[in-house]
Picture 1 (cartoon, helix red, strand yellow):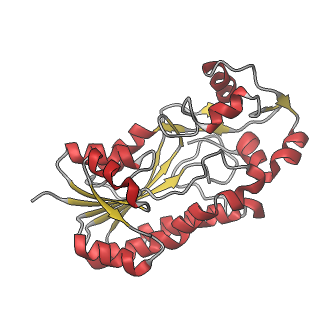
Picture 2 (cartoon, helix red, strand yellow):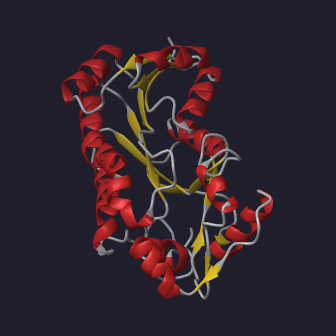
Length: 286
């Protein structure tokens, strides 16, 4: 009998690739979607669809109890179609913060009660406190960050703690910035639109670095984590971090855009707020 995987977030940029990989490896997959009209797409990818409101705790528990998964793979996000506005980061990330902070603990409790062996949870590698040269899994999250994006970091902490403190095996995957099909950095993604409009500037003197990961590689890591010998927290990023200034310049060239504007830090603070300054000037890659 094939092992069963409950995939929360079946049609996200990573989730859809997870379905394909899991199918090819012989797993039986139940993948969630909020919309009934999306069920045929999940079926076409090779999974059984579950039309589920993940904020309905009773429905989550019932679905996992009925399916009795061997593994639970949590790829839940609700990112806006456009790049989150750093000045409105609390509003733009509110639903994803709820998924991490409210739904993930519920999902893990349901996994425990359903007899699952392991849960793998998607997290992010760009919530570390600034400072230093290269972040590792032992470095602290930016829990004392400015108020506008504190909710984001606290939600990350909650989903990670729920995963690691579970009575079943827990794995947290801290992904870099996603690129590839279905992401902001795809040719039809909003970052590509914004870079062509010269709305993604470089901050003069900004020392931020970032780590990236292709969505297919993120999916491969997610599937591998289901049966790996190790548990705990893992940064899942490309081999080489990149300076944000270099990344922005090369991204503009890739998209055939004019060179990005260069602005002083005080202008960035006015236009993008403390979260924008963190991303463009202070964040440190893995």
